[in-house]
Image 1 (tube, protein in one colour):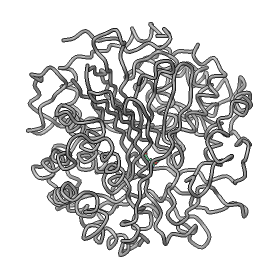
Image 2 (cartoon, rainbow, N blue to C red; image 1 turned 90 degrees about the vertical axis):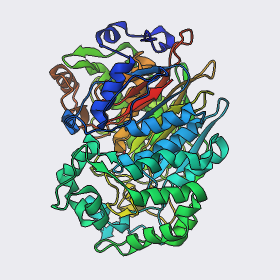
Image 3 (cartoon, helix red, strand yellow; image 1 turned 135 degrees about the vertical axis):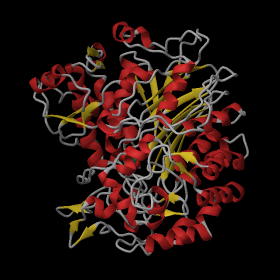
Length: 631
Ligand code: GLU
């Protein structure tokens, strides 16, 4: 067992007390046990190579771990010297690990991970969805945009009936919400530039698992058994795949084979993404969307054939001694986080480290106050101004206006000792548009992958089919996204157009925030991080950044810290993980507090102290099934 190296303690601000209070055990056996408890694996054994290798599943799992509000399984954090991969399911993490071990690049690993995730965590992401990928090659940061697009035939009235917005679930289920999938072509684009192993090899782990079968994980089983999942049976392919003949959901530990997906993946492995975007598979996708029995959609073969991933200018900002790079619009993630951090730089949040509660660390009332207020201000601007910039430019036609130091200073000055309640959007230079509609509730889905390879290249990729199980349409073993419901259902308010309205070929606004953090002085990579969680992603990733960069927590501690913040509504605290002192402290500051389920799925990899032998420290969210592996 190696002695755990302390993660980097930026600017010497490690909050020694909270860290010492956390019983961190970062050794291999615990990692293996944890991994097996979570992912239905059996026959664990230490890796002869000394890494975090685990033995793939070969027997039924232990009892399912609880989900949702009570689904919190403490995790130790993991360390490795050369390379590391963090993903939301152990089988997927393992696929990435094998690729890295074979000399693959970070992008190679991300592709292998994505293909396995689409199989074993099908409710969250896959080739039927979209993704954003941030890449660091040691010199340059790139932002790859694989976001879905609206069909060419879509109109701003897509989600209206008799002039009124459709109820959320009515819009979600069926063909109407399906955007042109973008993840696969984006990955192919990234692989062309940064792949080291042959494209076809990266599909081998997923093909093998699809053919030989994998054991349904506790989380997938819980989602299948949830009341919200009853509509899944309406799709004949999903009914046959996820449910028993008597209609009951398949249980955790059931071996599931997906020969149809294996065939699709084989085809893509040999012929590239064209196998998916043109020909029989594309035809099947379009047929299922357009002929949906209750809610047909508009996707066409031309939409699929014409899908183009994009490289965008990464949104990089400086925060204290760091440089953060994330995905610019159409994601609102990086911009909102950059605004929040810039606003917080005007506060003394750094002097309010987490405090000890019964269950572990939690934010102090003052820190939660400052963070929530910064969130209110950032979400207000996000809702008004952010959309696909190819259709609706940001105020001033770049993120600079919303991040202008004088503008930010003005926004920060709105934070007082008591909550502002609801923030109004600001008026940055060049502002013109009306308020966009806010998001509706959703089944937690989406997935985040962080990778660093042996050459120091890094990936932060967040990937999604939007709501849990997407549009609830299964084609050839994979699920189609419902990403178009990320558009505003209302195209205009009082006659003024909403930035994030539906338009043909436009990308819906996202909150996904895959983030790479660098040291400002040396330029060295410091962290790769991201999370699912709908619009709360901004708060989840923001919390992890404040936890690590301001309070000196390690990635695992910061991820495990209770979720908190405001999306410019009430102040949200995490159910089961908020003390009375915190609730009362916020109420005393005038906050309307709601304690709710907040199922983040954070994954992060962080550079450890440069003088130590151990180089990377990884954390995975105790609220989901993620694990980290590396050597
Ligand atoms: N579709 C959402 C987005 O792109 C992510 C959904 C989720 O994380 O649950 O912002």
